[in-house]
Amino acid sequence: MWVNEDERMALASCTTRQHGYSKRRIWRKDHLALDIRTDQIRAALMTHQYVDDASALPDLLDQIPADVPIDIVGGDGAYDSRQSHAVMAARDAQAAIPPREGAVPWPQNIPGAGWRNEAIKAIATWGRAQRK
Image 1: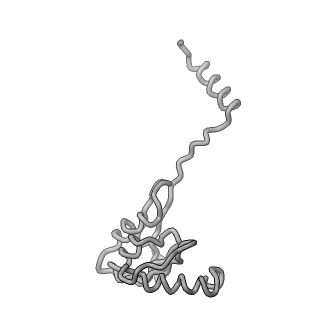
Image 2: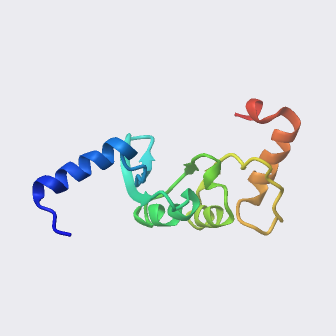
Image 3: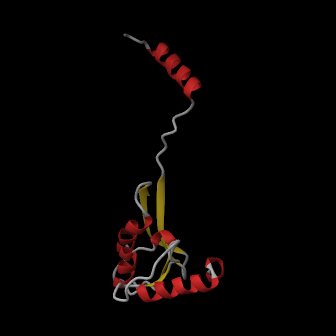
């Protein structure tokens, strides 16, 4: 079947009118590393929607030179993973990340386990809202 340009546009508008706009959207996530003393962005990383936050953290911290000290790494519970805590421990950074919902204590030999296990105990004692 041959369709000229005018007919193709008519078919496209008819399809849009009948079925609506495409629901297939591509989402991007921006991951930023900020220096809270100078309010500067030290590192930035853009990922697609299927990359979880914890797996983006090593690439984000690799953008910061090794001779630049990192004091605290903060984020939401999505960054609470063994990989993230290992990367933070390798840079001698303290984690300010709340444990995920339903988190269980880690063995003490895992990097970041001490702080995380204490946070889990505090949440169990006072509740998540009080811990924040």
